[in-house]
Amino acid sequence: MVRILQHSHGFAGFERALEQARQSKREVLFSQVTPVDPVDPLQFYEAGYQLYQGERSFWQDKSGELTLVGIGNAQTFTSNKRNDRFIDIKNQWQEFLSSAVQVGEKKLGTGPILVGGFSFDPRQEAELEWTNFSDAYFQLPAFMFSVDSDGQCFLTTNIVCTEFDELAKIWDRMQEEKEKLLGFAEGQMKDVKVVQVTEIEPEEWKQSLSSVVERLKNGEMEKVVLARKILVDFDGRKRSETVLERLRDDQADSFLFSLEVLDSCFIGATPERLVKKSGDSILSTCLAGSIGRGATLEEDQLLSDTLLKDDKNLHEHELVVNMISENLRALCQKVEMPSEPTLMKIRDIQHLYTPVTGTAKKDMSVVDFVNRLHPTPALGGTPTHLAMDVIQEEEKMNRGFYAAPVGWMDAEGNGEFAVAIRSGLLHDQHAYLYAGCGVVKDSNAESEYQETLIKFRPMLRAVGGTMQ
Ligand SMILES: C=C(O[C@@H]1C=C(C(=O)O)C=C[C@H]1O)C(=O)O
Ligand SMILES: [Mg+2]
Image (cartoon, rainbow, N blue to C red; front, side):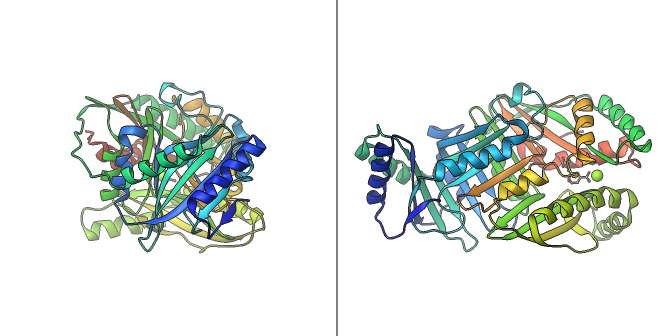
């Protein structure tokens, strides 16, 4: 566990961490939390552009309880351990923290925190656009700006000390950097233009979907989520802050995230929580079954009523509820949920929604929950392993981190992960956007295709593109 020196002055703690690194000849994390004046988190993100492009992260939960902006890599954690990628990251993190020294206030959402995500299915081979991402990628930011639910702001500075470090130099440099980042004045950003939006083989995708429907009718399995991608070309490199800004304006009640890895950025605004853990309380979400929004209140209400009674959508949804509740029961003492779904309405779409709460058994980390829950039938299918094989066979693409867990975790195993849908990857002068839908035996290729068009909308709008 992290040693917390509550009353110690920052520099004293830093000296101590360095001394420890020298003695043990190992890396020792020094982590300092200081309260800071409020600034716009996106402004802080933008402040890191010049020096830390490719090493930035952004997270904002859907209830606005916590915003995290990470700038600069104090350390990255990756894994190529395929199905063991969750446990591998958890173990690396615990091992890394065993010697850490922390000074300053200890509040949830501050201190040593990893921000990142996992791949959807490690069997998929990395296509060009995903080569920067391994089976798991997490950033321990050098500078992390946190905003809590009261709007209080904190800056965590993380320094990984080694036996060779020169104490005074590093300390001074970090203090200077910190001041620069916090004092950054927003500049005028030149935005790039969309040149072209291309759907990738939509007809083939529909055919493939129809063939899966046949297999579902034969009873081979119950549900498979099939996804596809579209390609957006720009006349230059699209900056992630412009996308985040648009997403924050349009999709404020979603989880907003960005994860820069070298010259790529995985970014999105997802309504779907996988799991949140704070102390022993657990929150998860079943989200599946969709219909569009109406142009008028009456039309919208009509669509809502239709969705709440639609057997095909209720079936899609029920499979998710069954899987999530069953798996949470294995890790919780108590699990509770309403017996009927309600609606989650967001700007372009409405979904069937069932929140699930639980009380975690002892000594669990949020990663243990992620490990157990991913992939849920909201993004994989039922039964899971058969659905994953069908996805692998039928989808002519690599999902990368799309539809996979993205979020954060702290030293005590608290954290939150969302399911990274309504998302895309910025790379070179392109954005690759992803959307999928739950296919069951009553699915129809054309209407599932239409459902993906709606799901592409928020990201397409955020990158400045249009379709049709
Ligand atoms: C697969 C996506 O969304 C999932 C599929 C849904 C559906 O088919 O009804 C609804 C919500 C999500 O669980 C996506 O947005 O890409
Ligand atoms: Mg659906």
